[in-house]
Amino acid sequence: MKNFEYVRPTTVPEAIAAAAKPGAVYLASGTNLLDLMKGGITRPDRLVDVTRLPGLDRIEHLPDGSLRIGALVRNADLAHDSGFARSYPAVAEALLSGASAQLRNAATVGGNLLQRTRCGYFYDTASACNKRAPGTGCDARGGENRLHAVLGWSEACIATHPSDFCVPLVALDAVVEIEGRGGRREIALEAFYRLPGDTPERENLLEPGDLIVALRLPAEARTFAAHARYLKVRERTSYAFAVVSAAAALRVEAGKIRQARLALGGVAAKPWRARAAEETLAGADPTPAAFRRAAEAALADAKPSGDNLFKIELARRIIVRAFTLAAAGTPARIAALPASPFASVSGALQDA
Image 1 (cartoon, rainbow, N blue to C red):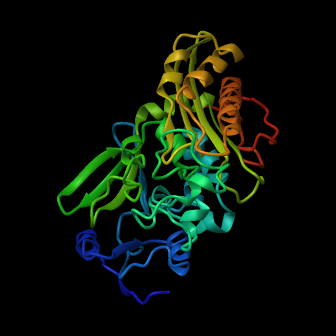
Image 2 (spheres, one colour):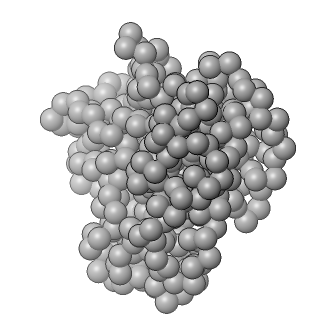
């Protein structure tokens, strides 16, 4: 591992000043960053430890009905907060389906938003990877690519975004709060991530020194609590990233879908909001036929980036299954195998 400078600021302005220098990166739990450093994928000159910054480990209910989650809140603490799980069940289900319990106990909300792709060529420094080393090429294009992107990819990069947590967050219009050299600003999480285009090394809208300080869920997100699910297909039920996942949420009134939300994971370089699919469901009956139409709309622009044509049909089926589960009602308890298609669910509505 490359030698690096380590600093531990005590205020957010100090952290921003320290991280604005070339070669600096932020360190929280390091569950992804330290692995990247050990493998030589990331070689920072300076680590700026933000774990002692005050006020970033709080979950706050704001007067406008929104929920503000500090960037240093642990994934496990958030998922196991009973009030949070009742109000945002799909988000809690997604959190509990990601990684191991040990990692969830350590990993932070802010770190989860910034984890890097799990593309094998990105992690292999002997391979060409435009995301790791711009301009070198993309060995995934002609390599083992069955788990790569089917939406939004480019010739420069076909990697996918690895987060479970971010998928329902995008569906529910979450907002990221950022402190930087120019002050504080807010960005919708959906817009925060960039598609690869010709610059896959630029994964998001952060500028040097920018620090994610919080994540906010709007008050409207709670209105989907009675009919919201996260479903994840993975190659093994525990400790695996999604082949395809879907966060589906409905507002059902008088037997009709008043509003639908849908986002997909494992299909693109960012959590993929399927707005065309949502529009097809407005005013529809919550039936399998309606959900199949939504699935077709969601994948209308999909195309394989390699040996992964199967992912398009798999995504369609996961969408139908996720909406079917959501329509049946959010279970009173999260299943023992969160987000797994093999979990048994009661369909009993939880209080919302």
